[in-house]
Amino acid sequence: MCNYCGCRDFPLIGRLSQEHWDIQESAGALRRAIGEARHGEAVTLLDDLVARLIPHTDTEENGLFAELRAEGSLAEEVERLCAEHADIHGVLGAIDRAAPDWPAVLDALERLHRHIDHEEHGLFPAAVIMLPLAAWDRITPGRSPAATDERHRSAGPTPGRWRS
Image 1: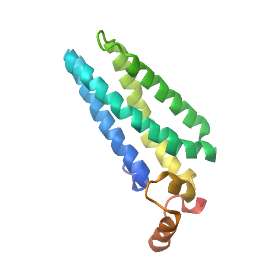
Image 2: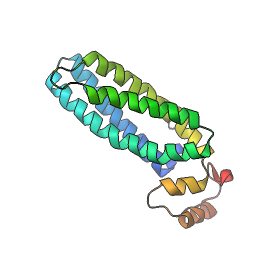
Image 3: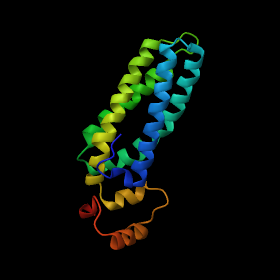
């Protein structure tokens, strides 16, 4: 996960990054269980992973991605990432729990790893630059435009400030 650009200082990105960490941990446990032929445990871990992915991708697609689509510069990239969400969810959600296709799960986990890496090191830092403060106010729960403006007056310039 990225630690160099400061994008995690934006509360929504910080939350999504923490969720990425949790998803990667869950995916790693699933990968190990499959590799060690602990298939009963793997089914439970698969269900846990899917339960983490659904609200996470919903938050991305209906919050950050919606604002990026509206801004326009990264719309094609957002569409590609949404297609990856659909692909990964489709594979993991369709696995027959009675007779799992573990190679398909492992392939989806590899795509998930690359997907998260791309969001962490590409999309999230770009979003900080591309989105105006009003967009961050809309997608950051508990923030009001007045509070954000006050924070910027007292804290000085921040990433994306010039775009407001």
